[in-house]
Length: 258
Image 1 (tube, rainbow, N blue to C red):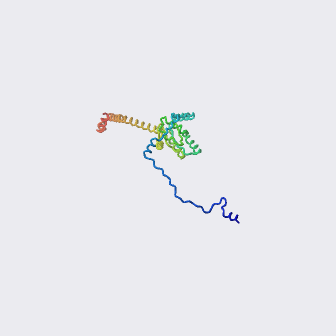
Image 2: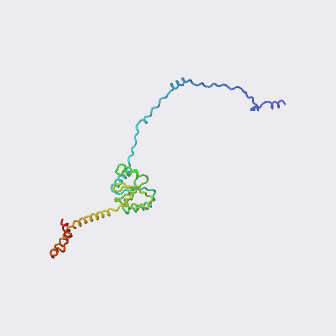
Image 3: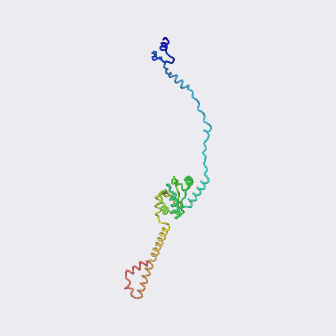
Protein backbone atom coordinates (compact mmCIF):
# COMPACT_ATOMS: atom_id res chain seq x y z
CA UNK A 1 0.00 0.00 0.00
CA UNK A 2 2.77 2.41 0.91
CA UNK A 3 4.62 1.52 -2.23
CA UNK A 4 1.57 2.19 -4.33
CA UNK A 5 1.01 5.62 -2.77
CA UNK A 6 4.64 6.54 -3.10
CA UNK A 7 4.58 5.52 -6.74
CA UNK A 8 1.60 7.72 -7.42
CA UNK A 9 2.66 10.75 -5.33
CA UNK A 10 6.35 10.93 -6.06
CA UNK A 11 7.33 12.42 -9.51
CA UNK A 12 8.67 10.08 -12.10
CA UNK A 13 11.95 10.63 -13.97
CA UNK A 14 11.53 12.97 -17.01
CA UNK A 15 8.19 14.17 -15.79
CA UNK A 16 7.33 17.87 -16.18
CA UNK A 17 4.96 19.37 -13.67
CA UNK A 18 1.77 20.93 -14.88
CA UNK A 19 2.33 24.12 -12.94
CA UNK A 20 5.59 26.05 -12.71
CA UNK A 21 6.48 28.94 -10.40
CA UNK A 22 7.66 32.06 -12.30
CA UNK A 23 9.58 34.76 -10.53
CA UNK A 24 8.32 38.25 -11.30
CA UNK A 25 10.96 40.83 -10.57
CA UNK A 26 12.18 44.17 -11.77
CA UNK A 27 14.08 44.44 -15.05
CA UNK A 28 17.82 44.93 -14.95
CA UNK A 29 18.87 48.47 -15.69
CA UNK A 30 21.28 48.64 -18.67
CA UNK A 31 23.60 51.57 -19.13
CA UNK A 32 23.28 53.50 -22.40
CA UNK A 33 26.43 54.56 -24.22
CA UNK A 34 27.17 58.17 -23.78
CA UNK A 35 27.77 60.16 -26.95
CA UNK A 36 31.37 60.94 -27.79
CA UNK A 37 32.43 64.50 -27.15
CA UNK A 38 32.65 66.79 -30.16
CA UNK A 39 36.36 67.52 -29.62
CA UNK A 40 37.11 63.84 -29.27
CA UNK A 41 35.29 63.18 -32.56
CA UNK A 42 37.52 65.78 -34.24
CA UNK A 43 40.64 64.24 -32.77
CA UNK A 44 39.62 60.76 -33.89
CA UNK A 45 38.88 62.04 -37.41
CA UNK A 46 42.26 63.77 -37.63
CA UNK A 47 44.23 60.85 -36.28
CA UNK A 48 42.39 58.23 -38.37
CA UNK A 49 44.75 55.91 -40.21
CA UNK A 50 44.60 56.22 -43.96
CA UNK A 51 46.29 53.31 -45.73
CA UNK A 52 48.39 54.23 -48.76
CA UNK A 53 46.92 53.53 -52.18
CA UNK A 54 48.44 50.46 -53.81
CA UNK A 55 50.82 51.13 -56.65
CA UNK A 56 49.63 50.34 -60.20
CA UNK A 57 51.00 47.15 -61.67
CA UNK A 58 53.73 47.63 -64.26
CA UNK A 59 51.55 46.09 -66.96
CA UNK A 60 48.98 48.88 -66.51
CA UNK A 61 51.58 51.64 -66.99
CA UNK A 62 53.04 50.17 -70.16
CA UNK A 63 51.72 51.76 -73.40
CA UNK A 64 49.17 49.75 -75.28
CA UNK A 65 50.01 48.93 -78.86
CA UNK A 66 47.19 48.16 -81.27
CA UNK A 67 47.77 45.22 -83.44
CA UNK A 68 47.56 46.15 -87.08
CA UNK A 69 45.87 43.39 -88.97
CA UNK A 70 47.56 42.74 -92.26
CA UNK A 71 45.38 42.15 -95.28
CA UNK A 72 45.22 38.66 -96.57
CA UNK A 73 46.46 37.76 -100.02
CA UNK A 74 42.89 37.17 -101.17
CA UNK A 75 41.85 40.69 -100.09
CA UNK A 76 44.80 42.21 -101.98
CA UNK A 77 43.86 40.34 -105.16
CA UNK A 78 40.22 41.37 -104.87
CA UNK A 79 41.19 44.99 -104.39
CA UNK A 80 43.32 44.89 -107.53
CA UNK A 81 40.39 43.41 -109.45
CA UNK A 82 38.13 46.21 -108.23
CA UNK A 83 40.68 48.83 -109.24
CA UNK A 84 40.94 47.35 -112.75
CA UNK A 85 37.16 47.13 -112.97
CA UNK A 86 36.67 50.79 -112.10
CA UNK A 87 39.30 51.88 -114.64
CA UNK A 88 37.90 49.88 -117.56
CA UNK A 89 34.16 50.40 -116.95
CA UNK A 90 32.17 53.50 -117.87
CA UNK A 91 29.08 52.38 -115.96
CA UNK A 92 29.32 51.10 -112.36
CA UNK A 93 25.93 50.65 -110.67
CA UNK A 94 25.42 49.66 -107.02
CA UNK A 95 22.39 47.43 -106.39
CA UNK A 96 21.06 46.19 -103.06
CA UNK A 97 20.37 42.45 -102.94
CA UNK A 98 17.22 41.70 -100.91
CA UNK A 99 17.41 37.90 -100.77
CA UNK A 100 16.93 37.14 -104.44
CA UNK A 101 16.63 33.47 -105.28
CA UNK A 102 19.31 31.65 -107.24
CA UNK A 103 16.96 31.04 -110.19
CA UNK A 104 15.92 34.70 -110.46
CA UNK A 105 19.54 35.78 -110.19
CA UNK A 106 20.52 33.44 -113.01
CA UNK A 107 17.76 34.84 -115.25
CA UNK A 108 18.86 38.39 -114.45
CA UNK A 109 22.44 37.52 -115.36
CA UNK A 110 21.31 36.20 -118.76
CA UNK A 111 19.26 39.33 -119.46
CA UNK A 112 22.16 41.62 -118.60
CA UNK A 113 24.71 39.50 -120.47
CA UNK A 114 22.85 40.18 -123.73
CA UNK A 115 23.82 43.85 -123.38
CA UNK A 116 27.40 43.16 -122.15
CA UNK A 117 26.55 44.01 -118.53
CA UNK A 118 28.19 41.87 -115.86
CA UNK A 119 27.29 41.25 -112.20
CA UNK A 120 30.19 41.31 -109.73
CA UNK A 121 30.21 40.24 -106.08
CA UNK A 122 32.80 41.76 -103.74
CA UNK A 123 32.91 41.95 -99.92
CA UNK A 124 31.99 45.40 -98.63
CA UNK A 125 35.13 45.52 -96.49
CA UNK A 126 37.39 45.13 -99.54
CA UNK A 127 35.34 47.56 -101.62
CA UNK A 128 35.30 50.23 -98.92
CA UNK A 129 39.06 49.91 -98.38
CA UNK A 130 39.59 50.60 -102.11
CA UNK A 131 37.09 53.47 -102.30
CA UNK A 132 38.49 55.13 -99.18
CA UNK A 133 41.72 56.10 -100.97
CA UNK A 134 40.40 56.65 -104.50
CA UNK A 135 38.58 59.34 -106.47
CA UNK A 136 35.35 57.34 -106.03
CA UNK A 137 35.20 57.97 -102.27
CA UNK A 138 31.73 59.57 -102.63
CA UNK A 139 30.32 56.10 -103.35
CA UNK A 140 31.14 54.84 -99.84
CA UNK A 141 27.60 55.40 -98.40
CA UNK A 142 26.15 53.08 -101.07
CA UNK A 143 28.03 49.99 -99.89
CA UNK A 144 25.98 49.04 -96.81
CA UNK A 145 24.51 45.58 -96.35
CA UNK A 146 24.22 43.05 -99.17
CA UNK A 147 25.32 44.90 -102.32
CA UNK A 148 26.03 43.85 -105.91
CA UNK A 149 27.88 45.77 -108.63
CA UNK A 150 26.68 46.02 -112.25
CA UNK A 151 29.54 46.97 -114.59
CA UNK A 152 29.70 47.69 -118.30
CA UNK A 153 32.28 49.17 -120.62
CA UNK A 154 29.56 51.28 -122.24
CA UNK A 155 26.77 53.18 -120.43
CA UNK A 156 23.87 50.77 -121.05
CA UNK A 157 21.53 52.50 -118.59
CA UNK A 158 18.25 51.94 -120.41
CA UNK A 159 18.88 48.22 -120.85
CA UNK A 160 19.84 47.85 -117.18
CA UNK A 161 16.63 49.52 -115.99
CA UNK A 162 14.53 47.31 -118.26
CA UNK A 163 16.16 44.18 -116.81
CA UNK A 164 15.66 45.34 -113.22
CA UNK A 165 11.91 45.88 -113.73
CA UNK A 166 11.32 42.13 -113.51
CA UNK A 167 13.50 41.74 -110.38
CA UNK A 168 11.94 43.67 -107.48
CA UNK A 169 14.40 42.10 -105.02
CA UNK A 170 17.25 44.07 -106.63
CA UNK A 171 17.01 47.76 -105.68
CA UNK A 172 19.15 50.25 -107.60
CA UNK A 173 20.89 52.63 -105.17
CA UNK A 174 23.10 54.74 -107.44
CA UNK A 175 25.71 54.58 -110.16
CA UNK A 176 28.88 56.17 -111.44
CA UNK A 177 28.44 56.77 -115.18
CA UNK A 178 31.37 58.27 -117.08
CA UNK A 179 33.01 59.48 -113.83
CA UNK A 180 29.77 61.15 -112.69
CA UNK A 181 27.96 60.01 -109.54
CA UNK A 182 24.19 59.77 -110.10
CA UNK A 183 21.28 58.92 -107.83
CA UNK A 184 18.34 56.75 -108.90
CA UNK A 185 16.43 59.79 -110.25
CA UNK A 186 19.54 60.91 -112.13
CA UNK A 187 19.92 57.46 -113.68
CA UNK A 188 16.29 57.51 -114.88
CA UNK A 189 16.79 60.95 -116.46
CA UNK A 190 20.04 59.78 -118.07
CA UNK A 191 18.24 56.81 -119.63
CA UNK A 192 15.76 59.15 -121.36
CA UNK A 193 18.54 61.02 -123.20
CA UNK A 194 18.98 60.17 -126.92
CA UNK A 195 21.88 58.02 -127.98
CA UNK A 196 25.18 59.44 -129.18
CA UNK A 197 24.50 58.38 -132.79
CA UNK A 198 21.23 60.32 -132.89
CA UNK A 199 22.83 63.39 -131.37
CA UNK A 200 25.70 63.27 -133.87
CA UNK A 201 23.24 62.92 -136.78
CA UNK A 202 21.21 65.89 -135.57
CA UNK A 203 24.38 67.95 -135.17
CA UNK A 204 25.63 67.09 -138.66
CA UNK A 205 22.19 67.84 -140.16
CA UNK A 206 22.03 71.22 -138.43
CA UNK A 207 25.51 72.17 -139.57
CA UNK A 208 24.76 71.07 -143.17
CA UNK A 209 21.55 73.11 -143.23
CA UNK A 210 23.35 76.20 -141.93
CA UNK A 211 26.12 75.92 -144.55
CA UNK A 212 23.60 75.38 -147.38
CA UNK A 213 21.61 78.41 -146.29
CA UNK A 214 24.80 80.49 -146.13
CA UNK A 215 25.84 79.42 -149.65
CA UNK A 216 22.37 80.14 -151.07
CA UNK A 217 22.35 83.57 -149.44
CA UNK A 218 25.78 84.38 -150.87
CA UNK A 219 24.77 83.24 -154.36
CA UNK A 220 21.34 84.91 -154.36
CA UNK A 221 22.35 88.50 -155.17
CA UNK A 222 24.91 87.75 -157.97
CA UNK A 223 22.48 85.33 -159.67
CA UNK A 224 19.64 87.84 -159.47
CA UNK A 225 21.91 90.61 -160.82
CA UNK A 226 23.17 88.46 -163.70
CA UNK A 227 19.60 87.51 -164.66
CA UNK A 228 18.55 91.16 -164.73
CA UNK A 229 21.58 92.15 -166.78
CA UNK A 230 20.97 89.37 -169.31
CA UNK A 231 17.37 90.48 -169.70
CA UNK A 232 18.49 94.07 -170.13
CA UNK A 233 20.98 93.09 -172.82
CA UNK A 234 18.33 91.16 -174.72
CA UNK A 235 15.92 94.05 -174.56
CA UNK A 236 18.60 96.48 -175.80
CA UNK A 237 19.42 94.22 -178.73
CA UNK A 238 15.77 94.09 -179.81
CA UNK A 239 15.43 97.87 -179.70
CA UNK A 240 12.62 97.94 -177.12
CA UNK A 241 14.71 98.73 -174.05
CA UNK A 242 12.80 101.94 -173.28
CA UNK A 243 9.43 100.21 -173.21
CA UNK A 244 10.42 96.94 -171.55
CA UNK A 245 12.58 98.21 -168.70
CA UNK A 246 10.47 100.11 -166.22
CA UNK A 247 11.57 102.47 -163.52
CA UNK A 248 11.18 99.66 -160.95
CA UNK A 249 13.58 97.39 -162.80
CA UNK A 250 16.07 100.21 -163.18
CA UNK A 251 15.99 100.89 -159.45
CA UNK A 252 16.36 97.18 -158.76
CA UNK A 253 19.42 97.00 -161.04
CA UNK A 254 20.97 99.98 -159.33
CA UNK A 255 20.38 98.46 -155.87
CA UNK A 256 21.86 95.14 -157.00
CA UNK A 257 24.86 96.90 -158.53
CA UNK A 258 25.39 98.88 -155.34
